[in-house]
Image (tube, rainbow over all chains, first blue to last red; front, side, top):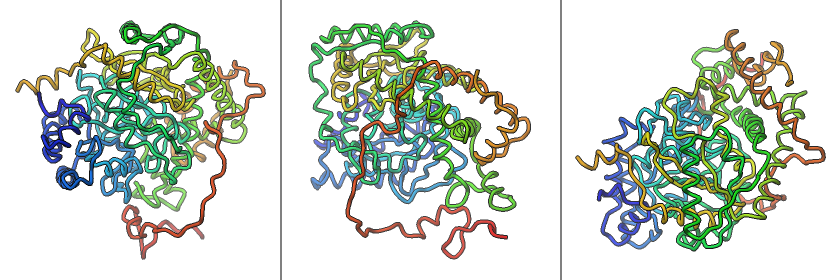
Length: 492
Length: 97
């Protein structure tokens, strides 16, 4: 077995016992990146010298007994909308092409404090707006399972990097499914935590009331271990919360006997691919075998989630992205006449089409005369959607469903019709609107060789139940597979 | 039916969004936005009479703390990312005539 095949927790154990060194682990990840990333193109920035320096420092910390965490020495990738000190953070946008933050995001501070080694920054949809990672201004990331298909998005680079063994885990961000959908497409595990669990300080904002940073890894246990590292209240993010229950690893392996799992009937109706339907049914079977009670129920209001989401997300985006004006950082147009012309030229040249589209929609729904009819209406609908989930969780411990209506689409087939792309977020956006945690677990591989994951949705603060159920599902499912790309490398 | 987006509305959006659009881009944006609004219009089918807009997911209240002096980021660090700077300040085009 190759070193890069280990899970993050397995690697952490071996590093702690001295069997493997932190530098050795970092080198293994860098070599895998060297072997595969020219094909996968998951990373935007990798700085090997800095990585090895950091790994050497961590190794000293482990030897001296200063670093004792479960993941000390484990190499990790970070999505490029999460600020990293002295390392470019671009949001995959021209407007931030040369932006080098002078501080680490709070989640990155916590990674480094726990001894994780940051390998580099991963590709994404520009400003996390998109579902395929194809709106990146810089490169097109491929799905390691089938290079002619997308990895999903917007955390496509992070998910592809984990799937290709180019890191042991990654950070992503999820505003409307951006961790859970690409995790399904790439055959990895990923969780969007309850809103407020991870500090958003240093996460470049898209839609602040929906954004959350979360872990992406090879399995559920790794996600739990990583979330344990990054979950914390932070006075720099007033929406972050004090949670007494962040010992998530402890939940992995706990019995799921008697757990009540509901599948919304609407999730299995029209528009759902047969393969995905099969994956959900298989997952239901696995959970039943593990002792859970699984039944269908009516959740309601599903048709309203996407329109409410796009109004709210675009409104917040139009406001958040006003800061990109070419004055303090980021791209400034070469030629302009006066201040306003400079703003408009810098933004028009710096933002890509999908970002411009959402800024315009957001500007419209917030404008005088339309604010009540669109924005406030969407917020009222949001309250109703939250209520529907509250009712669901009075009868069930969690919800099981798809993470996306299909397996990963082919490259180049999604962007032509933005509306169609928006509709594919149908199983994920409600979770953000209601602030809930959602965990994607790999479930099966279809006839085309593409993985399909399922999504477990919990009530607010119920991550432990999700980790227990996710790990229970994995145990019945059996060991997960690897893509031909990664397997092919092994044979050499 | 949703609000019909007129050319005048697009001109206003261009100002609010601080973006330049060519005539062709503007027409395309108008059509895309119209399609989106026609779709969003379905929200009106849901009765939300008496429902408060959900702006915060959890009940929150003001949190007070002592006003403490702490380290600030050195200006020179911040200016490293400035597109143009002069004498320790951000340089922008003349704003007052």
